[in-house]
Image 1: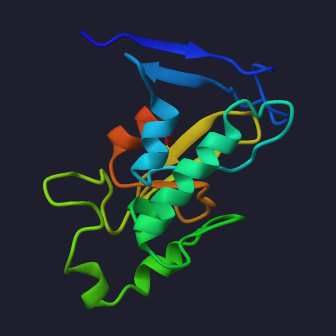
Image 2 (image 1 turned 60 degrees about the vertical axis):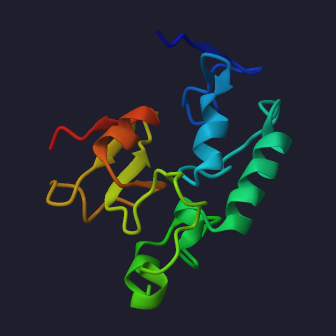
Length: 160
């Protein structure tokens, strides 16, 4: 059985009302696991909630250097969010060939994530799937390959 726990930093919420937490699954920090696999990026960090930010940035840098997950697509992850058009520019040679992680390990990411994660103005984390009423209008702050990934990152599915 896995034991899950959470810990807040200085504040429970950021300046936009979003819940802030460090999560552990047994003795591993889940936040770090997402960064290691290239499934998340360090963004929207505001003092005083910076307890682990330096370590997170170091982990992110390693994932970037290895080209894992979101870092496997040139110009996809940007300071202002994610660039879905970058996915369309991947040529077939880059999309196939060698995996970004050593053989036998899974990066946990697909080459073309389509599920959009958005932080609403009311503080809710909502994901949108292609064909959803607000999908085309939604600016993605994070992209996911599966609904399970979005939910594991703290998002709920859009009701429309």
